[in-house]
Structure formats: C-alpha cells, structure tokens
Length: 373
Image (cartoon, rainbow, N blue to C red; front, side, top):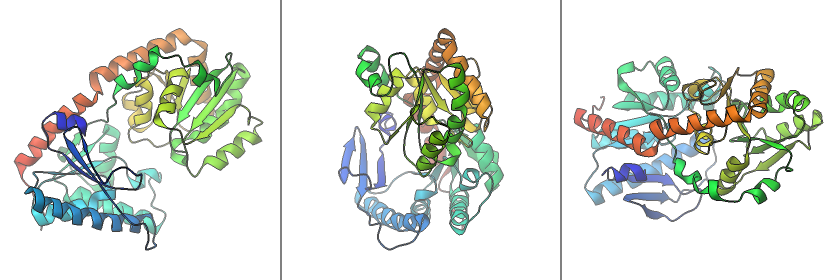
C-alpha cells in the first residue's frame, strides 16, 4: 500500500479493527480505516465475514459521499468480496479482485462442508463480478481458471513482494543472544515459520527429523507460529522421542522472526498446498538457505539448486535429504541464498510490484465498470 501511494495513487484502505491500532491512520500518503466490528451474533466464520462486510460496505458508501467517489475498487479475496461487489454495482465503478487462495484448493479439490461450499460460491461470485482478476502465481491463475471457468485473458499475474532492506540492518547486529535462546553453539538451526495447519506440511518436517538427526545429530528444529495442528505436532515429536529437538515458539513478533532468520542455517517450507509462499520469499530476503516442497507458487521462485532446494511434496525422506544437503554443504547453500537475494532485488521488490499493479489499475479504469445486469 505505501508503495502504491508513492506511485501517486490515492489509497483508502478499509479493514476490520480486530488486531488493534487506531481507527483512522495515515500511512505515508495512504489512509487506513480500521472499522470497529462486533463478533457477537453467533454463526461460523462465513457468517462473521458477512456481518463485517455489511459494515465495510456501509462505511465505503459514507466515504464515497464524503470524498466525492473513487475510480477503482481493489478487493483481496472473498473475505471482502460482498462489500466490494455491493459498491461496484451501486456506484458502477470498476472492480479489481486479487485471489490469493481458494477454498477448494485448500481442501485438496474437495468441498466437504456447507461452510466450505458457501465460501466457494462467494469466491465464484467475486470472480464473476470483477472487471479483472489478479493472481499472485501462475499456479493460482490456473486454479482460478479451472475452478471458476474464468477466461485466461482477464487474469493478471502479479506476485507478492518483500522489502529485503528490512533485514540489511540485522547483518551488522550481534545475534548471539538471539541464537542462544534456541540452540547451543554447536547446533544447527532448521527453522519453520508460518501457520500450523495441515496444508503447510509441518508434520512432514517432524517425520523427516529422525533421518536428519541420524546423519546430523546436532540440529535444533525451531517451529514458529500457531494453528490447530500445534498440539498434534507436539505429540508426534514426543512420540518420536524428539521433544528436546523441537522448540515450538508459538506466536512470535516480526522482530523475533527476523532475528531467527538471521541465525537459522536452513529455512524449511514443506507445504502440501501453497498458492504463493510469501514466507519463503521473506526467508530469501533475509539470505537464509531455503528448502521447499515443489508445489504451487513455490515452484516459481524456489528454483532447484539455483535459489533453493526443491523436494517432493508429502515425502519426509525427500525433505530430509534436502535439509541434509543444505547443512552438509554450507558454501553451496550460501551461494543459493545469494542467488535468491539477487532474484528478489530484480523481480520481487515492492516498488516493482507497485509499478505493475498501477499499470493494471490504468487498464481497468480505462475499460470502465463493466457491471453485469
């Protein structure tokens, strides 16, 4: 958002105020409105999203009247799709939608429950209403075409980006105290950070640990993040007799995560489903050697033996071999990390992503609203 504003775009961002922060804040040249929402009223995740969307749509119309209108709506995923479609139809302005993931994709191609089917329908409706779509990877674009029958010529592929400069200062910082919190001086750190959910494949890392430790006993596995799989992962590590080899940190602030990137010997992303893989890209920005499953969006920037090590998905032995190759050959691993950092500087800086997004904005505004009736 700040980089779009720096390109001369007047940005007004509406979001629920669930994580705190001021109700209204200027970030650079952009305005952020955090709407006070109530989670009362019962219902599931989908119903909660519907209630929040009513609040967002109401405030968006108030802003429209106050500011004299907008040129474009940019919605990110179905979670704000109801409000975006309502504003699009009432005000007859173009709607651009970025699709980051799909409910059917997360379910391995299946929609098992009523809520999952409702979310899928909301995703379909947003794709239908949007003037154009943005997907963050070729994999995601193919999935959107397949699941929602979207023509290829209405999809733009613009990846997520990272600000690699945020880690530059860490390279001059003494991180010994940060490292000592998680491992002994002689131990290597294998680091995972992300949500602890099935599709992220963290259970594959736990199952790969015995093979890794058989060849490289001085390894500490640091798993940062929270999610419904956390207790199952802890139990599985204990069953394997590896409770002392795994450190589950729970939630950690960004500053601690960045310092862990700075001391890790290897960052692992064993995903089973990954529309893009922003955390792996952040690891590359921090110059950490990356081992990742060859799935989804990860395949598009984790280039085997060039910017990282790609391993077979859902294969503990393949993951173990990727980690072992990284730990056993630190010079090669460091070279891959430098290659990855160079790739980010060329292709994934937010300034570049903002420029590409602005080009799409201009095309969409030039085409008009294209409201279906």
